[in-house]
Amino acid sequence: MANIFGKLYQISTFGESHGGGVGVVIDGCPPGIEISEEIIQKDLDRRRPGQSEIVTPRNEADACEILSGVHEGKTLGTPIAILVRNKDARPSAYDEMALKYRPSHADYTYDAKFGHRNPNGGGRSSARETIGRVAAAAIAKQVLKQLAPELEVLSWVASIKDLKGTVDPATVSSETIEGNIVRTGDPAMVEPMIELIKATRSDGNSVGGTIETVVRGCPPGLGAPVFDRLEADLAKAMLSLPATKGFEVGSGFSGTLLTGREHNDPFYLENDQIRTRTNNSGGVQGGISNGENILFRVAFKPTATIMTSQETVSSAKEETELKGKGRHDACVLPRAVPIVEAMTYLVVIDHFLRQRAQCGA
Image (cartoon, rainbow, N blue to C red):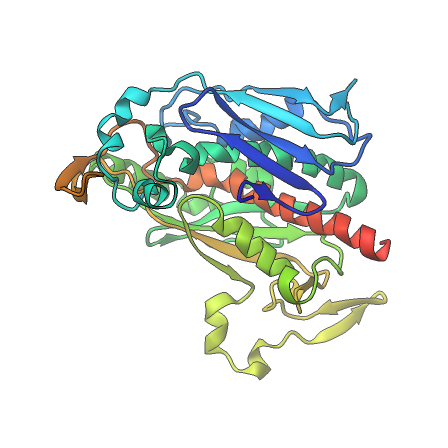
């Protein structure tokens, strides 16, 4: 079903934005991995609302509860269930949205598909669903620390609207990214981006941008030909996130401006290891990792809920107007950084386990 992601490391998320809670069931996690609620909570705290002055003020601690699959601090190899209860739900803020379709939201399309929906906070289409993904990825990260200790995933805000940072993917650090509330990798862009988000929110509007991700220390050989190409699974993972509208790997669309001679990545030997002198491929060739840094970018649209009146249509098919209510991000990117990292870890762990199962390495 559509709520399941992965093949060997498989997750199924559940819950709605203003329901009793949200969470995830993880199947396929190897046994004997040290895990605790505290480890998971560190990543959940990075995506939770109310963490800074530029994100939604919804007051949720997002405290996780491990319900199964872990005993005495180690995974059992059985399904792991994790629950986060909703504490600050305010469904009354969405009474009008139950009758009127919010522009660029999933309200109309959910009705068109299912004939019935939960209008409170977007229900299942809310970014609150991603809590389960982040929790599952926190465990995946612990697995990879044992199986591939050199592997590291880092994401950062590369641009917001027309403000674009300059970041070296090979050297950017988690300390730099997490050292500012925007989570940009360029310190010079912190204040301009903060001011842009504040000004946009004051105007009742919203902005989008891009998040860039690097996977460092990834071994060659992950991925598969044809349908399960590594970059194809990464693209699916990223475009499954709310508000995403684009994905590109390596040179991406800018590669279309180059010739083959300019774009090809020449091979060379370094201490008996095959390397490439450039990385326009973004660390993936033929759908399989080549050992270089995997580099990709994800585009996020401006937040669909804005605090100004817009034209819309009601579920009774009457033309009307609707003004946004509730607590929302004027820019989703700062809180989306750990979510993009999470989906990257989920793709990598799945392909890592598949590689071991098929090729024994």
